[in-house]
Length: 176
Image 1: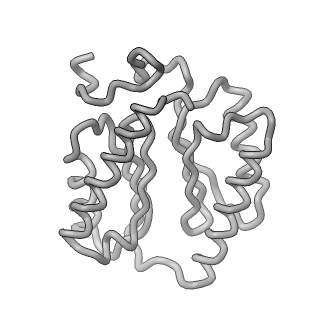
Image 2 (image 1 turned 135 degrees about the horizontal axis):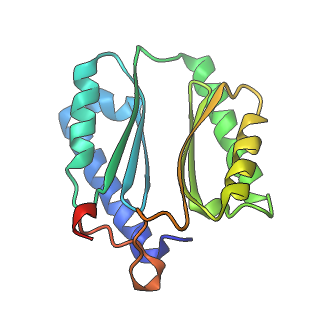
């Protein structure tokens, strides 16, 4: 895994802090939103009924130490029903399995989530060919409507790695 053990642990601490803030603010928001976190980059997706809830959720996502970027993919709507939930669950399971068993993809470097048939990708790609392969795999899954990528390349300057390969997400990006 490109982010290393320290990076994964930092991302877990960020997840816990954001979830804690969401539960304190509004348990319904916690249930409606999804978090994907990789190297201090936080992707928030899901559906909430109004802009005020979305704004509060994003504000909370910025609060934990180590957050370097927050990507807002929240939709303002009531959300789907049981059919959407079932389709998304199947998409998630199939995508995770297909990436895991593809010998040309380092699947551990990707976080994926399907919401309403939209697949959100976050992580680090080894090269353009790998990312293109991930796109093709995601698009070929039944009921996928679109694929939105927030994946960066392994040599992207936003990835400043500390010794051991872990991202040093304890400092704001501007001070690196």
